[in-house]
Amino acid sequence: MSDTASESDVLLTVDRGIATVTLNRPRAINALTHEMVRSIDAALVEWETDASVRAVLITGNGERGLCAGGDIVAIHDDAKAKAGENWPTGSATARFWRDEYIMNSRISRYTKPIVAIMDGAVMGGGVGISAHASERIVTEKSKIAMPEVGIGFVPDVGGTYLLARTPGEIGTHLALTTARMTAGDAIAAGFADTYIPTESLADFVEALHTGTVDTALSLASPAPESALIGQRSWIDEAYPGEDASAIVERLRALGHDDAVAAADAIESKSPTSVAVTLRSLRRAAAASSLDEVLDDEYRVSIACLDSPDLVEGIRAQVVDKDRQPTWSPTRLQDVSPADVDRFFAPLGDAELGLASKGPSS
Image (cartoon, rainbow, N blue to C red; front, side, top):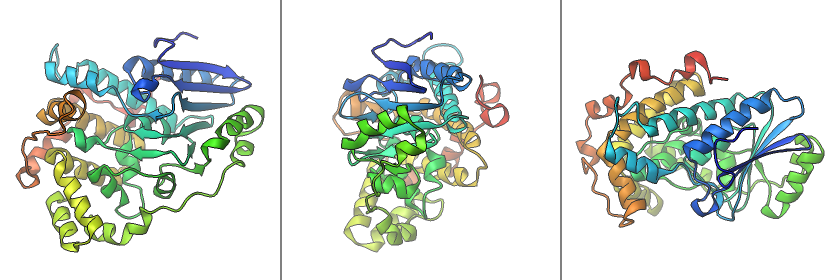
């Protein structure tokens, strides 16, 4: 099999009927590069018609997590440079997102079982490569989040589709505050299916190789309780509607510690990203398919690439690490409906177009 990513970045193997994708950048918590995405997607295309492959396993090397997302430093550098023709749709980052979203779509519609082990940190692009799989495994170490508004971005990789389909307004709370889900939270919110303690993962993987997926899943343990679902009453009260400023006001009016902390968290994020994310979630809730949402997310991502908050957010959180971003504008009240509208503007010939054509083979 050809592999356009170096072996140190992603390992692609087939053993006893199980094709395995092993993300292998442990120092970067297996953050995805464009080369990794292209390699993985090509392998998925090949394995789907390979009669010797009966299921696919997605896992990551290292103790820290499956995948912390995309290579945001590369995205920062690209967005800062604004170089090349047809900016931003012709940029390296736009090409990365296009191929990544095609891979996300392929995972969701795959005709063979895909089992994803969501151990440790699973964030952003890590959610995209795992939470659309047919069998999603979490452990006591799982920490799952869509933290994009904290870097001036908006949840993508089909994340708004998943967030919009959580019970009540749980997904809105998760998206606007960047709160992390535990294993129990992820199962209750529909981001995962099965709980297997880390000490049982090796046995689970071996059972997957020697028997059926269902037999391997019999090693599952009862899911832990979800503290997040236990907070639904105040979350559902605070988060309805399409006005992020009103959500913050309701959270503060509730007065208790969790609600006030949520309001503080939202107000520390990019105001533009918060407002656009809220619109994205409401549009995703009305969408008829993941592919339709991915098309929408691609438009938003391209607009984010040309927005000052993305460069500033990544600078503050990852490059300089001063944790002191200067957002533009600085307040939610100063983000107008027209400001939000431009993030959803059609891209013409540069549209992703998954809803109309599906992932290429």
